Amino acid sequence: MTSVSMPMDKVIALGDEVEAAASLLRHGLSLLASYTFASRDADAVFVCLAGGAEKLLKLSTGLHALDTSGSWPSKATMTGIGHDIVKLHDHVRLLIVRGAPTGSTVPGYIAELLDKVDNDPHIGKVLETLGTYAIKGRFYNLDHLADAPQPDDSPKQLWEALHQGLLRLHPNLLMQLASVDQSQAARAELNKLIISSITGWRELITRAWRTGVFGSLAKQWAPQLSI
Image (cartoon, rainbow, N blue to C red; front, top):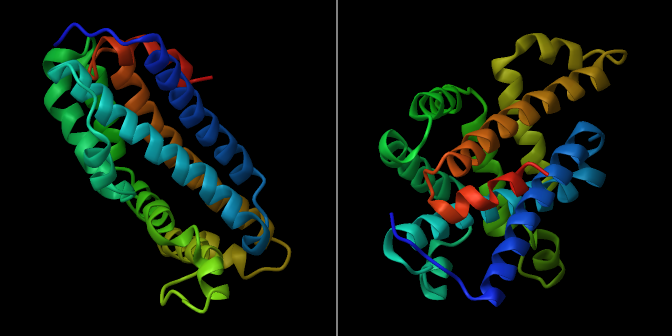
């Protein structure tokens, strides 16, 4: 672990990014709790959740590098990481696996949270869907208007595909969805599953920050992630 200090302008920038990551995830989960129509809500949910997840993972990557090497990754390095949320998650997960046994004040608890996320049946598909949106879904309709249509799914189709994947794991909800009287309740339950998965994933990373896995600055800023 390296003792690091930052000039005030970078401290302010770091604080702004931490608060932005927390705010985007918080608002995304709030939007998802009241999500109704893919055509109206999908982009707003994606912008918040994909943006928040990417920021949280890149902040974790940067803070770990700062703690272990004394310097934040260069712009070229961070740009090279791109928007692939699954790859970012895999990288940050590995940092937690390697760092928690000696870096965390509660390694057993971090191991429990890690195991919970690893065994979550939905988080992999959720992160994959958020990553697909982050990489190419943000400008799907603008590309179409510019006569450069993308061959893949639109944001609302991505969200519907995510729901369909969850329904295969929960056939009881599929039956409810086919019922006019129960369809809205079934969609609400699907969204609760996604909320639970993202919340558990965020908790793992937040607790890793709070307990020292990503260094002293991450530990200092960790409370902001929960606001």
